Length: 441
Image (spheres, rainbow, N blue to C red):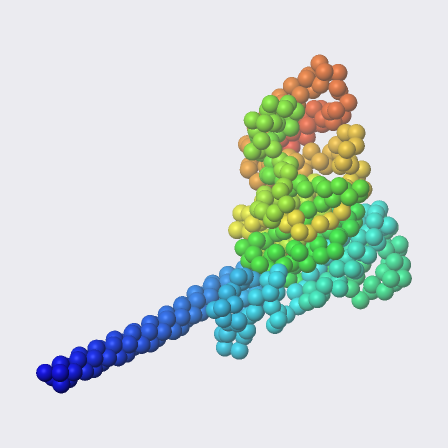
């Protein structure tokens, strides 16, 4: 009996051990299956990420080619892609092309991006030379060759600027053009556009006032922004005053309601009409805006190819407002880019728009430019309605200042000058067709 009992126990032990071994083998097989599943899932995720980023790059490539006529290579569009996960892949290949994301939208294989700076001077030779000196420092930026075209609007600035170019060794990148007449800001810039295209169409044209000094990285910040945003056509800088204080202002398009606010000059009216006030205080982030000052405005070549240059019917004022309006109608957005900082003294040619100065009587061409802007962008009927509202609002504003004994705050002779140049007068309703630089085919 003992032998039988002992044999049965051994049988049970063997069965138990066999079951344990089978269970352990099953667990191992299950672990291996899970490991294989994880590997397959990882490969699938990697493949999925690869397909996703390839699709994004192809969309960027298509957008870049559409936004640039004969534009830049696929690598430029690929360089704008950000946030590629390092765990996914280190580079994306399309044939022999390679795009490795870098800070600012650059990449290793990116070709040079040609920038032509256009400066129009009129009796501001010394300021123009200081401006050129600041641009010279920007030429140290890699892969962004910068050339400058200085247009003297028949002011005899050319001799002083020419001597400075030779003395500083700038002749390899600065071209001085003497305009046959003083045709205004738009005319001078169109002369600069023409010369820039004759020397080889640039990727971007940067308008700079002679009374500006570009801070380090100002030009490259605009270039990098436009390279990373193919839908943007125009980018403007943030400004600082001569004392270093900020002037973070960009602008909405003028309208009948903005004219009402400006005329009344009343705090409660401004609060109610805040959405239509022309000057807008900007936050320190890049954002779209209606228009930016021509004191520092970078323009994509595709914009000039599409709508031409500035309208020379504006002698001074409203020309960049009109230009940004036409660009928007053609599908190009305008952006304020605070990473680009420029010091701007303001009003050095005309002495009219000096900041924090006593209001001065506005010249006739200011009123003529204003009238043309409203008529050209919204039609003569709208321009007449705007003038009617402006006359009534400024009349009420003048009465308010008289009652407050603060007549020194108003622009001298504004009402009579506005009435003289108003579209309400039949002789002021002639609207010449646009006249601007047009790139040759």
